[in-house]
Image (cartoon, rainbow, N blue to C red):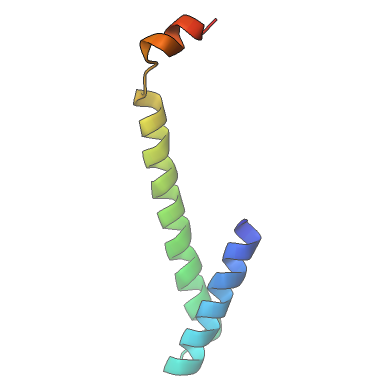
Length: 64
């Protein structure tokens, strides 16, 4: 999945570079850095949610 996401980001960077007349590599770097920070923050939130999630009584009974 990550490869497809990077390809989509590269396409977006190319569109930005073409439409705004900015350097493609700079636009791509900004987009990838922003995406990585978003992904890191999302993973942190999901990890916190998983850590705080408890088992309901039915799950506790089945947990062995």
